[in-house]
Length: 325
Image (cartoon, rainbow, N blue to C red; front, side):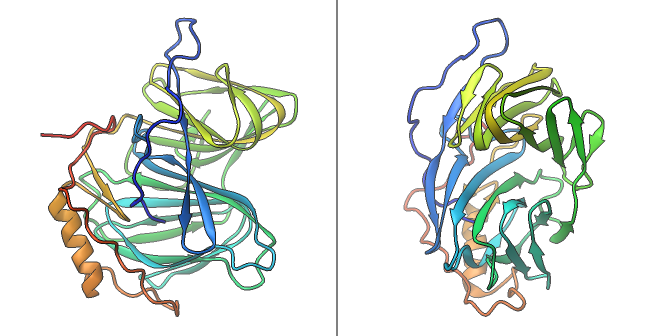
């Protein structure tokens, strides 16, 4: 999935939503982005108001889409640097292939983690005979300096740990929630969790005080920290919160993301996460020349051409969107 689309201006101004002395929250509206010929995603990060949440630097929510009799997701081979991808499905199937030789079908309740390190290529395709509905998430985690030049890796997790706190059912995707830890290996202090509440349900979730957090609704409706949420908007919560309150007027499925604020300025362009304009230029040239990334094993589709570099120099930006230097 690609980050080349520009970050839009805010649809409505953000602001405090509680007024009770609690740390203020910010609503970040998403926007629709086409991926290939057949798939449109709702992109929540990066956003002009908030580029990152912890090391989470990219959030795409797709579906639920009716793909009966249609190709579904068809993303040809493309490269990545400097990041980890997390793929989580609620409905449907996606076949992951990569330049390490991996070929892995992911189904609902399973998780794919791909670490690009210095460079990897992969493709994502709905297989023939796929289920009629596709719904899920793809997330990027920016790798810190100490990890971003390492070897690429891919791991598949067939089941993720769950816990129940009253009416709140939590699946831990990354990090730890209330003493339940995910087996997924990441390189920054992070949390990622799917939350589910029945219609009329309510719950409280402990939070790590030093983390900033974000919550989006994948389906249904919910009130989170006193703010009504529907699919299409990300609620940002700054550090210092120790608890999250949730209620659901309709059955709701949500995603919680969090982490220690990421202090390394980044350059994000197309499918690359780097630290300078020169790094991005080099990565693009390597992809165009067939260097570094390798072919995606078993995928008959040709590689996705890289877009032209922008006419202005790419600048490293911090998590607030401010340029460095």
